[in-house]
Length: 512
Image 1 (tube, one colour):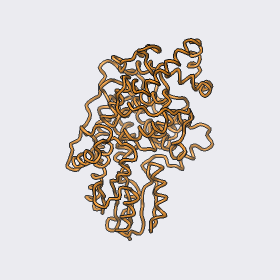
Image 2 (tube, helix red, strand yellow):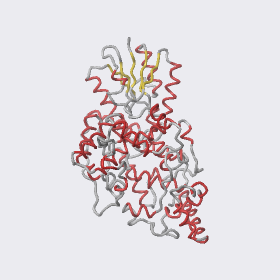
Image 3 (cartoon, helix red, strand yellow):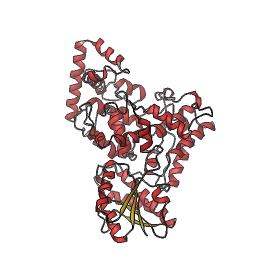
Image 4 (tube, helix red, strand yellow):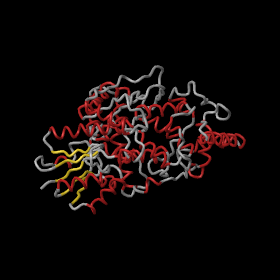
């Protein structure tokens, strides 16, 4: 009897159960490009092109391996333009005994597939997504009766469980679990990114680029040049290149920001891991091997592995544990609408303009730009968390709700009230000046807090701290901040808070 096996656009893995159990003679794989998924937020056009091309190449590989594939392209006649609709159409056309699908990475899709059970005339099985290294049950068991969830504790457990960067005596490599203190160097003069790979565009990718250009003419972002890997072989080449040429310098400068340098020493692997072209543990093993072989320092290997084995798995666990209510969290009562410059990039703040330019051009900016520039501004200005969340979800090629929502609502905006992070990641212009060269030539001066040339991050920082003093003054990591604020005196405090309101007015009026 035929089984219809559904593969979503971010599940391009041959190791999932939906593929491993397939019968080449009888089963059929269903893959579909649908407008409902391509447009539920204003996705970056590079993100759409990457996923459509990767999907088409994956379907081609399945066929070459002898599998039967029902592939529905965006402009195919009869395309219902929804995943539910295409599953129903396929069931009607093929009359399978059952439908099998891997658990999706977004709550809205999981709910949709649960509802689809009622409409299907056959059984629908939803299999676990085994690409992840910590199942829902394992994460919930780790949480247990903990009052606080901290990634560092979870990360240590994952290191032990998967024997990554561990010594034979059960101690962490180098005698420490975390080398983050070694990974915060400001950019040195002349710091640039090593050359990055660009993959030749075959007929499939060229056709997809033409499709996206035609069907999404007003879509956000710059479509070309298009450098993405779209096959597993290409993604492995990207991994090889990162391990050999980028990882050795990743640790020292992973918090640094340099004008005109979107990549610096960061990996571009997240989009490929999240779409299934690479596997998290194989990436971690490669980084560990580079350290053990003397090809990369331990602080670089550990910092990189922590992002995948620790942070990536942790935020996924948080997402599924606290959904669906997590998206509605707004602990700091932030309600400012998202400023238009997040889409247009038109702002006098050089740091924000730089991060937004990278985002527009590449569907990418590295994690410090996301957290400490665009996220930090959103936090300080009190932007509405759900609007900020939808923006991050739309504009980055590696963004799916399971990973993006906790990073945005929890890490960047503290909207979850401290579920994800013990303190808000708030910073003034002094941090940006230290960790970047963005302030050179900016319309605003990071050393000035009040006046015409005052950096907006300065007054907004202090206004944020004053607004939320009742919440944060008892935080063990923040007494120095409020001691500094108290020493300023009432007149200085009033001047800063008035300056903050001037910045917010300018933001609302499109003048910031």
